[in-house]
Length: 276
Image (cartoon, rainbow, N blue to C red; front, side):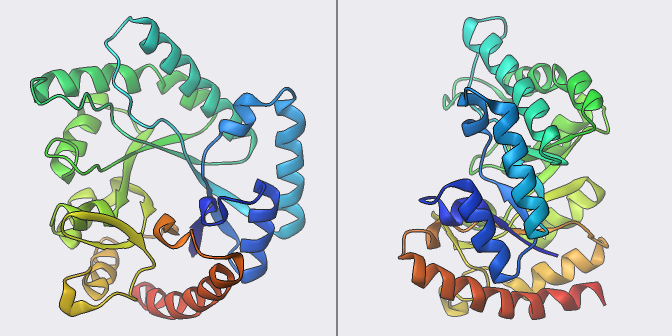
């Protein structure tokens, strides 16, 4: 099932973006983030408004992008604020009917902080979410990054193993993997049943392009989508195929509309075959 990240229409109110995507034919989406609900003076009213729009449009918000990975030492004011914010995000998103919240691992942007400390901090931070996740029947998908620690499946699997909870899985970002020249089919197979969310987009070495898949030139070493499709078949993946394409989102509305309709036609046909 094709899905689209709502920030494709970043310059429209959320309800307009949802309706525009639904009109094009996509009925499952990733919410770009819960910020507007967190900042609202009447979050419950706003949640109801969006739920009503989704219901009327036949739309399901399947994923949301939550925590963005800002580094905090345990117990500091920043840490406490981040923990409380993430818990609020979980509660709000559960009320929107969302099943998975995508999150970046905490990243200190400091090469002097070793892998074990990074793992320990992330285990403690995400571990603080477990009871809230259970109470709201949600999961966290930790997203691979463009770095040596959490860019590979092995790093994410190690962290999830430390968490030792069925509330955590992996979100695969194909553009991040391409940027780091990592083997995407191998990442899919290693993630296996822990792959619970996706950010599909095209890219290549050194640049996090986030373009529509399958449009870029093969001879310029963009992603081999045939191999990606086969790997999804190999692990019997049945989650949504969510497209995160902010690299396409700065054209006019008319051009974005046209690209979206064409992308749906192409990608619906292309990815339908991995389920055969």
